[in-house]
Length: 434
Image 1 (cartoon, rainbow, N blue to C red):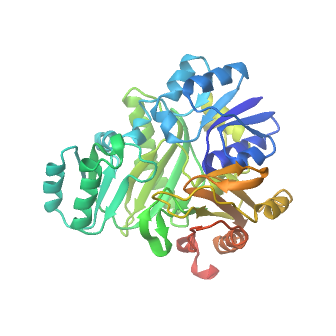
Image 2 (cartoon, rainbow, N blue to C red; image 1 turned 30 degrees about the vertical axis):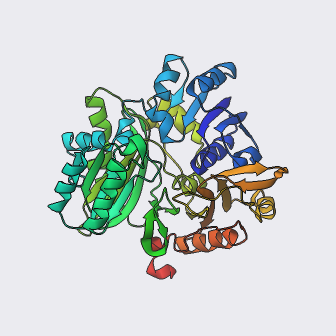
Image 3 (cartoon, rainbow, N blue to C red; image 1 turned 90 degrees about the horizontal axis):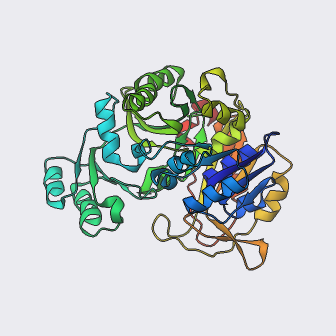
């Protein structure tokens, strides 16, 4: 059978790569994909992004199942349109996707269903927002209500920074419609973790735990990004904490959506803060897999992803178990100069060809592309074309060894102005690994 993966980033590359490994799959189409998916055996890029074009393609090619990677098509209601056309698609409906598409919606949902999260208030009036933070102390978090491609969160360490963020979003309108309403949220201390599950609307199947690194620079400095690297498993999520997260956050979320009249089918990502006291609070919900968390998670997944998706579509996730590689996986993002602001583009990437020869003969690493395109020389020339360019992902007996393997490979890849953190996974390297 043929499958369709929608998106062009590293998450979609990893998803399509994993799906193509199934003996049940003839071809995985990626819309629109990137240079990496174009080079991957068993994958084929198609130049469609409009929902109507994707529906027509799925009908023409008799696509057995479509998997949605990024958030924007979900927020635009792609699942509703595919469902109406009688096409199978894995992802939440437009109404359910508001958990990510609107921070205000998500906060109200969590408060209604008793899901722990930081105290907050919502504003579209700048004067009222400025007055509100005058009653607070820094640090404080300012969030754009809508989708802002990873640029909608400002962790303001001082009130002056908070005032500036309010003006940027509500007065200067630099985030457009996404920042026309903002959420001002209490700052939470602790360690972050990503907890991702598959849901069939009633049953939930947790994926391997992971930890993202949002800040641009080492030691969690610099501006927030879409993610500069991730590793799996997240050492902070003990079995006891795992059970607590399922009990206090994931199960109430899926049950709450059902009580609100909208079964949640799809991937659900809970960005969590683990406080020093062991409390767990939701920082954000995403209605899809994380990026770059997907890359190490897919590298560790041993089960046939197509079978898992089939169970999800049939609402039988309670009948299936998932198998993971016992090794740790770590992915480091190589980003363009200027990211997360205005990234440089069209710089040649060197070193990839030699590495890809070895990539086909080993199972301990894979390079997933995000912002890449072909140059004038076709497949012999790969250029940068976005903010995050590559995610070099590797396995190791422990996180330290996965870290060493990933960084050794990344050191052989070059493009002008490359930005890369050097401490991905440092929180997960135990004392016995150092």
